[in-house]
Amino acid sequence: MIFVVKNIYNKLAHFECAVLFFFLMLAAPVLRADITGSAHDFSARGWGTGNVCTVCHTPHNSNTTVRNSPLWNHTITVATFTPYSSTTLNATVGQPDGVSKLCLSCHDGTVAVDSFGGRVGSVISHGFGGTNLRHHHPVSFVYDSALAAEDGELHDPTTQVTALGGTIAHDLLVGGKLECSSCHDVHNTYNNRKLFKISDQRSALCLTCHDM
Image 1 (cartoon, rainbow, N blue to C red):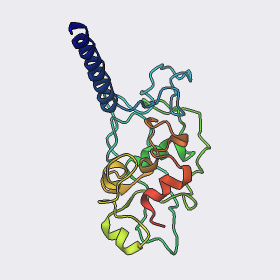
Image 2 (tube, rainbow, N blue to C red):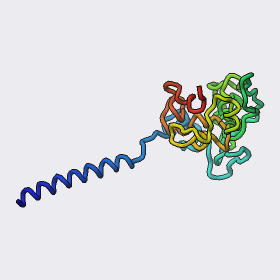
Image 3 (cartoon, rainbow, N blue to C red):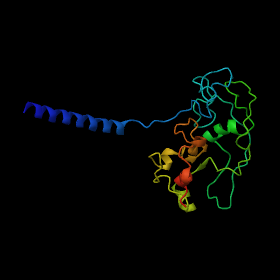
Image 4 (cartoon, rainbow, N blue to C red):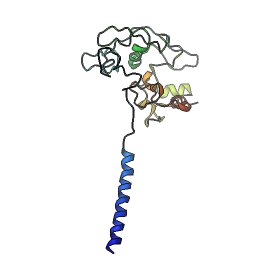
C-alpha cells in the first residue's frame, strides 16, 4: 500500500514539474538578436572606439536639434532632399525629419559614417541612393485614420495589429509619423534581413500597412 501511494506521489510530482516547465517556457522572453555583429556594429572599424553605441549615441553633450533624437552623437545632414511623389499618393510628404533625418545622416552620401563626436570622417556610405528619394518609400509623413480612409488601400493604424503584437501606431510609427525606423530596426532586435522589424517573406512587412 505504501509502495502504491509513493508511486502515485512520484507520478504526480513529475506531472507537476512538467506542467511548471511548460508554463515557464510560455513566460520566457523570446530570444532576440542585437546590434552586436550586425550591419550597424562599427566597434571594430578602428575609429578610436571599441564601443558599439558611440558612433550614434553619447551620454553627454548630445545633439538634440532634431526631434526624437536619442542622445545623438553623429553629425546631422543639412542636405536638401527630393522627396517621393506620385499621382496616387494621398499623404503629404516634405523634407525628412525626426529619426529619418538621423538615418540619412549616414545614408545620404553627404556625411561620412565616421563623422561623430565632433570629428570629421571620411568613410562615405553609398548604399542608399543619395539625396534623391523619389524612388524610395516616402518617410516623415503623418499616417493616421484619416489618411487610411482617404487612401482606401491602407489599414487603419489605430486598429490594425502587427506581427509584433500591437497596433501599427504603437509598434511602427514615431510621433504618429511613418519614418525609416517604421520598417527598419537599427539595433537589429528581430534579426531579420536588412534590419527589418517584420519579415518581408510573402510581403508580410508591406501587407502590415497596405490593404491590397
